[in-house]
Length: 67
Image (cartoon, rainbow, N blue to C red; front, top):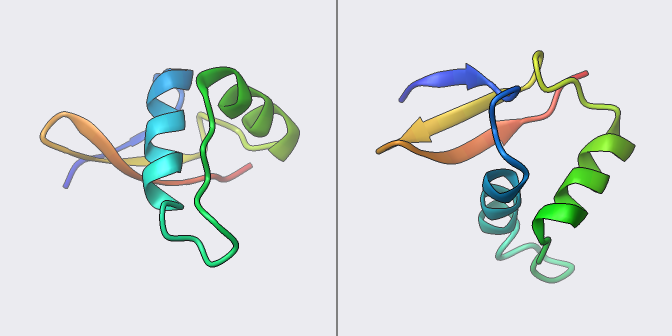
């Protein structure tokens, strides 16, 4: 499974992988649109160049936000 930094991940792709990752979250599923995903990333203080994305079949399937 290839890993890359998150600097090239679009807001839409981050929203999809975030929604998938938290689809069965105990407090309820997460439903972010791309603009909400961007606001989340900006507020989190995560550094996309230090964060990691896991890829499978050319699609992002996991992430770790680091900053």
